[in-house]
Structure formats: structure tokens, C-alpha cells
Length: 303
Image (cartoon, rainbow, N blue to C red):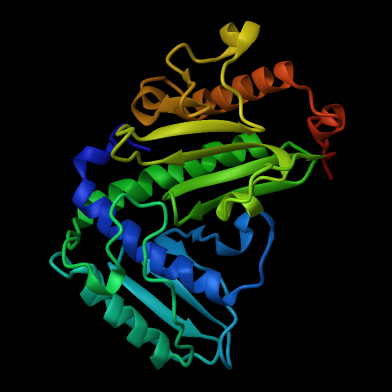
């Protein structure tokens, strides 16, 4: 990756518009896919050109929705080869895009009503009424995708050796982040029935990810977050690396900005060191029951 990046304020108008568009695809998965723990059924996945839903059950034929940010269009295709595309263009409001998005689903034979209120977004205007968000900067979107693909490699580098249950990196439409998760296998009920959290927090885990920032924390960053949550690092504070990384108590997580990661000679190795050091701190605070097996890589012999 070239050492260029965008923080949220650099492309907020476009970031918000793209975020809302991707939420529509995510909500189609919410409506149609079989439910899985930790909302795994709503994940979207990186491609070389953008983000795809993967296969979704349809009315008659399965289908997929792909945001092709290289060609700047959203592609809809079912398993019988019926396909259409909606262009991504500056000046097209979310309300206009929503109408075209719904029309494309109908054209491929799987019209899908969705909840039109944005999820985990600071502006609660419904998609079909949103005349505010309409920016689409092609260069900014491609810079974001380049950062996401770089992040994917760094997340995979950390996650690959672990032998326990692992969610590999995927895109979550609510918070616009790319994340992966390690699980301990230990039950850890959240204790409060608050909708989304009811299904997201019931097992001890360690989540890592990358997200482009938001109105509260504007710097694009890598993060690591354990559950159950922690409020401080106790005696293990000095284990956190690199020195530019920090623990943010109000976020209950560890953060390393993309800018800081790219300032090192080997950014991927730096991000991996960051994740590993945060994981070591978490194990120091509360060692997982099966960590000795989970963290012992499976050694492949040369054939």
C-alpha cells in the first residue's frame, strides 16, 4: 500500500453516502439470510474491486449484490444469469439510490422490503426520504478500498495461526468496519436484553478490525476490543506496542491509527505486533481456559 490515507473528515460526505448505500445491501441480508450468532449472517466481503454480499437466498433463485468501486456501479445478479447494475454517481441522493436499488432487486426476481432507518448512524433520516447525502468522490472511494485491502492482509496475518473458532475479516454495515474475531469457547452472557447486543455478546472473544473513523473519533484506525469489556490495562500497560498505540477507556479498546501504522517501515508487521500485544494484555487480565491450545499454531510440514 502506498503511504497515503484518508481520515473521516477528509471524505465525510462521500463516506456517509457510501455507508448508507452499503447498509441497504446489509439489510437485505438481514431480511433473507438464516440467522447466525454474532450477526454473522449480515457480513459482507471484500473483493478485488469492492464489496459483495456473497450468495443470498432469493424468491426463486439465489442472488448477490456487489459494489464494484472500480467500475463505480452496484451489480445485481441471480444464479440464472439475470443481472442489472445501478451506477454510483456524484449528486444522486440516497432517496434516489434507494428507489433504483429496490427496482434492481425486483428486476432480478427478489424484491425485498427492508427497514429503511439507518443502523448505528448519526443521522436517522430514512433511506427513501434522505435528500441530504448525495456525494460520491470516485478517488476517495478507491483510497478507502485500498486501505481496506491493506487492512485485510494485516488482520489475516494475525488471525491465521489461531486454532480455535475464528471469524475471518468481513465488512459490517452498521459501523462500516472490517473486522475478525477470535473466540475462547467460554460462555459470557451480556446480562442485558438490548436488541443487537443480545445476539452479539454471549461468548468471551477478542475482536480486531479497521474502520475509517466517525464524527466522534475522526482518525482511520486499527482497533482491538475484548469481550467482556475492560476499562483499563492494569499492570500490563507497558506491553502495548508499538509506542504510538493507545488504550482508550471510553471505547474499551486498543487503537492504532492508520497514519501511525503507515509511518513504520513495515506497516503490516507493525499492525500484527499491535494486535498481538493487545491480545497478550487481555490474556494477562483474564487468561482464556483453552488458550494454550488455541494459540498454538498448527504446523504444516513441507510436502
